[in-house]
Image 1 (cartoon, rainbow, N blue to C red):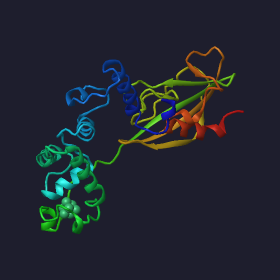
Image 2 (cartoon, rainbow, N blue to C red; image 1 turned 30 degrees about the vertical axis):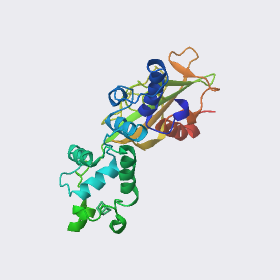
Image 3 (cartoon, protein in one colour; image 1 turned 135 degrees about the vertical axis):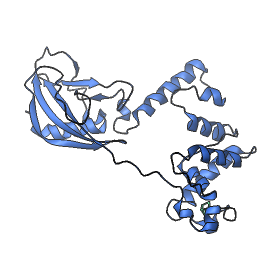
Image 4 (cartoon, rainbow, N blue to C red; image 1 turned 90 degrees about the vertical axis):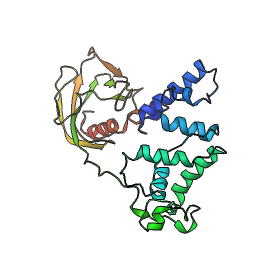
Length: 267
Ligand code: SF4
């Protein structure tokens, strides 16, 4: 997991590893080609199961990614906005999926969306579906897919406690496997919320450091305040020795906190 630090999508990384292990232990190392079994593997949901069944095993399953959604919504002028339109778009896409070479078909539609039926300026003149496309006939294809306006992202606040022992080891915490930054190392602190809660992990002379870390996750903005304390050698907690500690092994927000705090730490 340290090698994945900073890349985001930590749940996917953990599931990828779990899935590889499940294939080795439960399927003798052979990737299953049964759609129902695929759906039981860690990290494989309906989209991935359909993509693997279709593209890897040439089975007639319907793959609906953002590109395919756009193509279907324009072909049929689907008025329902996304994401509510997904079941309708899946049905339309399924009706077009052929029994022969469904894998090639799935990739062709995704490529059509990625290269011809592009979001801003679709090249209808070279599209193989130009004579069937309701959106093109009506001249309003660029208005599709319809989308539900996104709610603005909320801002959460938190405090990161950066503590160091006299031997240079850092006090850290491993985040729970489930949830944001799951399984990754980070600076201790209370759960992020509407206000920054003081929740020092151990009793110490925590100093307020200048500056605040700003970071944006998929669903919210985060403002993180920083505290620092020298900790006694017998302090309880998870310590990472100075030889093992590398800021680049931390998720981006935790690395940003360290980078901002570092110039203000006693040397
Ligand atoms: S004709 Fe134009 S709008 Fe319709 S599917 Fe093709 S590229 Fe998209």
